[in-house]
Length: 357
Ligand code: UD1
Image 1 (cartoon, rainbow, N blue to C red):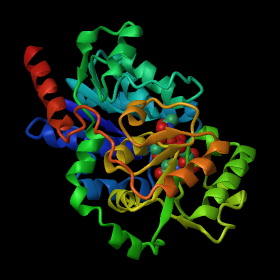
Image 2 (cartoon, helix red, strand yellow; image 1 turned 180 degrees about the horizontal axis):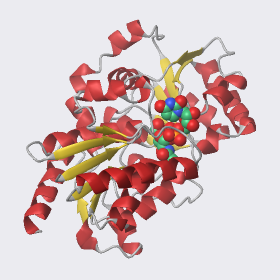
Image 3 (cartoon, helix red, strand yellow; image 1 turned 180 degrees about the vertical axis):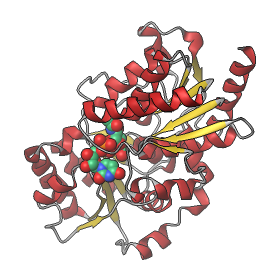
């Protein structure tokens, strides 16, 4: 086999679709680790994004970090030994990403990391640990934003490994722009005319019941201003509901949405409240104000160029009041190379790398 793409969690699927499409013609295997396994977290994305069905599914599922990462590594080692790929391509910063990079490196298989060099400098985030270690193990580091190259250099990674290619998640967004029909998603999910869309799933926000309860109070404060639509990620669902998230007449709880409905709902939102990584980028391009409930971001370009702003729990309601009061938002400036062509750029680098080998 020439290339194995390792996909595990929902955002990986959005990033991989344009890369796999641009590499068409090469011998590629799509390996799904099964980190995300609910149909709404996985299959619907394959269908909507035109991703090829996985050739292999490890069915790893959930567990503690150690248990999940260990199960990922055992399954990946077996498959890499069988497939003998020339290159393993990993995406983002989830446990499947670091597990695949570590296994490949030990088998002397080169690794390409899509979305390398992002740093929150917050090692309490599992994703920051995954990002740093994955980059150390990667031969090709594909970066979405120029400052990432400096981060890699500061960690001793040779700059020749870094390739500034733009943002494949934005390729997927731009390719589907015509499909994001806000009126249709309003009708199918009974959304109010004007709403704030919220998503919350970070361990730091939802894993501790007391923190989740405080967060819910502030989300209710937003719902006092305008209706709040919140598709609930499986992580944190129990804590947010136990804290009474749905006990407010303005709160509309939804199941996780597929990609097309989700971005359509984002496009129609008056403001987005989130702790997601990718959504900071998607709102930047869609021009929707984004309040990120985190102390830091690995995606600062969404603040300097886009619509993103970091807020504490206490700042959330006043910030939402402000974005909701502004009736028009000046469109942000698209960050450099977020132009829908990251997938082809990545494919070019991989093709040249293969020829040079
Ligand atoms: C993972 C990523 C996170 C990413 C998120 C996107 C890591 C360390 N974290 O977090 O960076 O933002 O995906 O969604 O890899 N569960 C289900 N069904 C599923 C998947 C998960 O019910 O299909 C539940 C399980 O109870 C599980 C929990 O969600 O224990 C957490 O899943 P896990 O894969 O560990 O991490 P995420 O929180 O989804």
